[in-house]
Length: 282
Image (cartoon, rainbow, N blue to C red; front, side):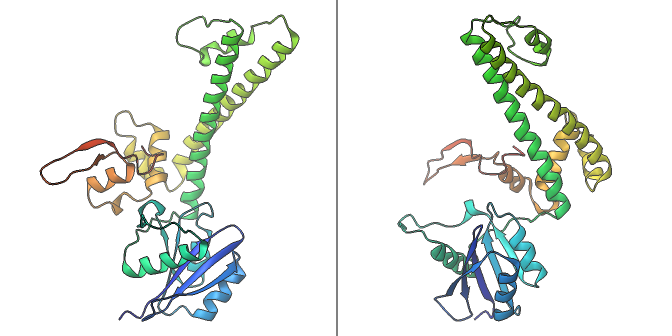
C-alpha cells in the first residue's frame, strides 16, 4: 500500500473545497478553507508535507494555488479538466464531490497534469493572448462599421470590404443626419483605437522576442519559411518546452490537429480534427 497522502482541491475565488485521502483509507476527510495563502499554510502545517501530493483542476484561478503549495514544500499538479474521467450516470455535482473525485482519481493514476509555465513565460503569454483579444475586438469593430454602412446604403470602393486601405475613405464620409454622423465617428474611433493598440503590441513583442528567454527558440523557428516573429513567439509561449513531447503524434494531439475516430470491429471511421488541444497554437 502506498504511503502517499492525496490532497484534492476544488479551487474557487473565495473558498477551496479540500479532500484529504490518507493511505489505506477509502473515504477522504472533507473541509472548506478560504482561498488565501494563510489558510493554505495552516492546512499544510496541520497535514504535514511528508508524502503529501496535491492536485486541482486548471481554471480561472490560474497557477497561484500551485505556486503557493510549491512554496510550502508540497508537490502539486494542475490537472487538465478535459481529460478527467466522468461517469455518464452522475447527476450530482458539488465542490465536495469534485474534490473527492480528484483525490481518488489522482491516487488511481487516472489524471493528466499540465505543464505549469514560469512567471516570465506566463507574463509573455498573457501579452500574446491580449493581442489576440484586441485583434478580435478590431474584427468586431469592422463588422459593426460594415453593418452600419450597409444599413445606410453606402458601398465600399472595392469588393474586398473594409480594411486599412479604406481608413482615409471612411474618414471622409458625411451623412445628412448629425446623430448618424456622430454614431459613425464613434464606430470608426473604436476601430482606430484597436488598430493603434495592435501596432504598438506588435512592436513590443518584436522587442521582447529579441531580449527575453524566447530569443533563442524564436530565432530557430523564424528560420522556417512563413514563420515570422509573432507566430514563433506564440508557439514558444504556448508550448514552452517542445521536449516534453516524445513523438510528433503527441504534439499534434496537443494542438488538436489529429482526426477524431470512432472505430469498432472491422469498421474504421475517422472524421474532422478533434480541436481538443491548444486553440491558440492551432
